[in-house]
Image 1 (cartoon, one colour):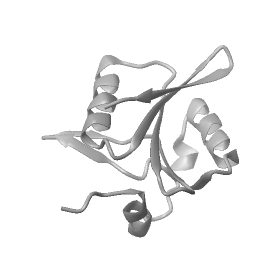
Image 2 (spheres, rainbow, N blue to C red):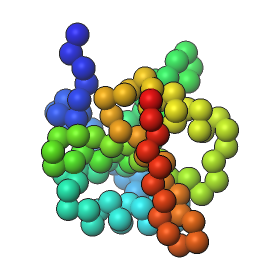
Image 3 (cartoon, helix red, strand yellow):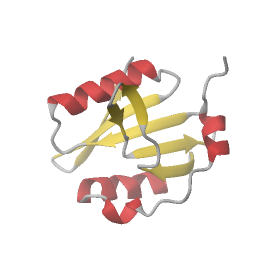
Length: 117
């Protein structure tokens, strides 16, 4: 069985998304930070939905494909509900070939927390 990796995701080439206009202020600010990161090859905005179980899905805010071929999913939250945190942790466990990062902003400072499997 072949694992889905960052290279395979790039081959899928999802259609360009217009979801950037639908982002909230926090997500828009983080999107600009990602765009300024020179180690990122491509950024997809809410372009992938991960199936976690029966009738349970999770759509991360961003997928960043790095120049080294690795992939990182970013989730931006100003306020985190319990069910959102559970979905993020389950996704990190089920799709452990990818990196999952929770992004928040505390008193104007960006805080990134890697979610481990």
